[in-house]
Image (cartoon, rainbow, N blue to C red; front, side):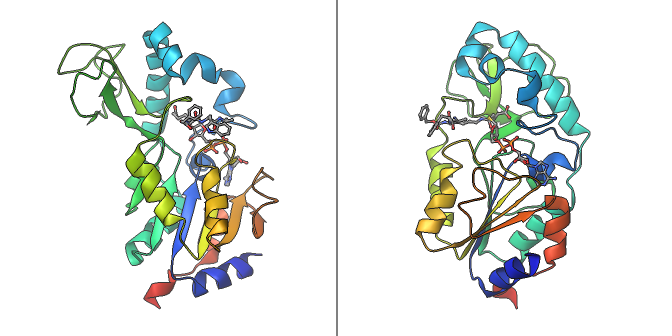
Length: 245
Ligand code: BJW
C-alpha cells in the first residue's frame, strides 16, 4: 500500500495534501469526532456557531481559552515535519489544512491554506474595520476578549458552522485541486466545503489517497486508502517531492 502511494508521489509533478485533526492527534491535540473527540463532550451548536457566541461569549471564550492552553503545550509531530519538508523542497506541493492549531506553520510549512482560520488569531465581533490580529497570550487579559480598536467584543479567528470560508482560501484550495496526487490525511471528510476538495481533485484526474487510522466517508471514494497513523505513514513514505529529483 505505502509502496503504491510512494510510486504515485514519485511520478507526480504536483501534490496536494488536505489535512484534518488526525494529523495533530499524535501531538496531543484532541480530534473532533470519534473516541476522545471534542464533539463527544461538547455540543458544536453551543460553542462553534455565531449564534452560540452571540448568546454566551464568555462560555465560548472559556472553551477556546482551554483549547489554546492545551495547544500551546503541543509540538508539531513527524507528520507535520514531513509535510513541511515537502513544501520547502517543492513549490508544487501545497498543504490545505482544516486545523486551527497552527502546528503546520510551526513546523515551517510553506504555501499553507488554513481553511478554518487560526485559534491564535482574533477578530472584532462588531466588524469595526480593524483587520484580524494575532495574539498568542495564554490566557488573554480579558474574558471575553475585547477588540483593541473599538473596545467591543473580540471573537476567535476561526470558521464556525454556518459561516463562509474566506474566498481567497477557497480559491487557493480549488487551484491546488489541479494536481497529480491528492492526499487526505487525518480527516473524517464530513465537513464541507473541505470534504468536497477530494471529489474536485478526482474530477481533475488526480490519483487520490487517504491516510487515516479508521475508515471514513472518503475511504470508498479514494484510489487508495492506507490505514495507519499519519505520524507513522508519512515518514515511512520517505520520498522527496518529485520536481526535485
Ligand atoms: C487520525 C489519527 C492519526 C485520528 N493519524 N488519522 C454541504 C453538505 C452538507 C452540509 C454542508 C454543506 N456545505 C456546508 C455545509 C454545512 C457545514 C457542514 O459541512 N456540515 C457537515 C458537518 C454536515 N459547513 C459549514 O458550515 C462551513 N461553512 C460553509 O460551508 O459556509 C457556507 C454555507 C453555510 C451554511 C449552509 C451552507 C453553506 C464551515 C465549516 C466550519 C467547520 N468548523 C470546525 C470548527 C473550527 C473552529 C474550531 O476548531 O473551533 O472545524 S468544525 C470541526 O470539523 C473543525 C474541523 O476543522 C472540521 C473537520 O474535522 P476533521 O479535521 O476532519 O476532524 P475529525 O475529528 O472529524 O476527524 C479526525 C480524523 O482523524 C478521524 O477520521 C480519525 O480517524 C483520524 N485520526 N488520529 C491519522 N494519528
